Image (tube, rainbow, N blue to C red; front, side, top):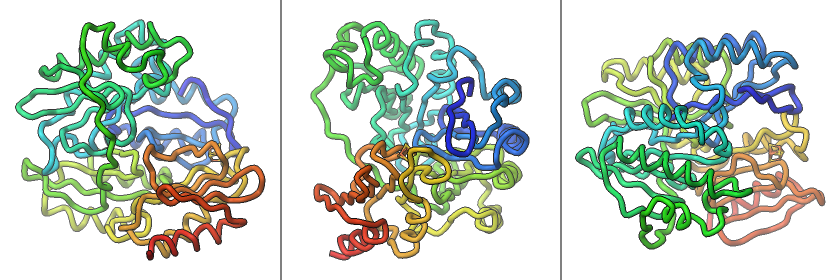
Length: 388
Ligand code: SF4
């Protein structure tokens, strides 16, 4: 938020949202600053953060002061390091083992209180998992995972520490891990890049790691309603290409006071009364979100592409939109990128389309790859492979 990036459509600010959580007040403030200072486009990112696009050259200071007043900038020194992902239903879903909202809030508070963590790289990422395992394939550096009965474990780079404690104890370990990483990291951006890897950091804390467990891709977060364990209802909508805009944020603010964003480009309204679900579903559909769980948009993402990024070699968003019309929701997740940097591709995404500098398009489907001349032919290849 304090260090704007230059993009093809102006300056860009990233607003970090621990747990992907937004109140109706925060939604309203974001809508206003986007209208006043930006070009009206907001991206929902692969880290469940928001990017405000098309900002003017001098917008940074005013933006920061508006967002700080809305509680979205609790620490200037920690603006880039508050990367805390969380299970989107945060303990409410049928597969969850515990509630995690208080753990997310405490973790963010403890990160912001640590002077050593001023220097935590912006790519370092925490995940608070409610036990459902949702989004664990995002490859967090540190995972705090509910085990039920108020107990939590901690994993470093996918390997569990020999530790179990309550939420506060797990947060304490997670913060000490991050501080030990800062002390040991050298030039590393992520725990996996540290000399000696996660084991070095675990040893600095006097804790051992259990053997490596393979990361698995968890099921998609499908659009639609889910009965919460406490009797309420959570309603999830999907934002095609992660694209949001001010009127949509205002409509979300009108419909609920607790919205959860996920790296799968979904928005979930939690704690709805069952009697409000049909009206809320209709309003979200009318606002431009996808509520059908059989939509071709389920599992389909693309980078910013032409018009928004100066490195883009093609309009992958238009190509991905055409692909959404023919793709099945049950097809494996896929990501389209307009250059080899492959921004926004979640770890472990099995299908990818990437534009190369030498004017061809690489198509990957699981372990197989092809080189084709056009994006249209890339889409054709994917249709063929999915039908096999
Ligand atoms: S993948 Fe390339 S074109 Fe797409 S947003 Fe990243 S840098 Fe830009």
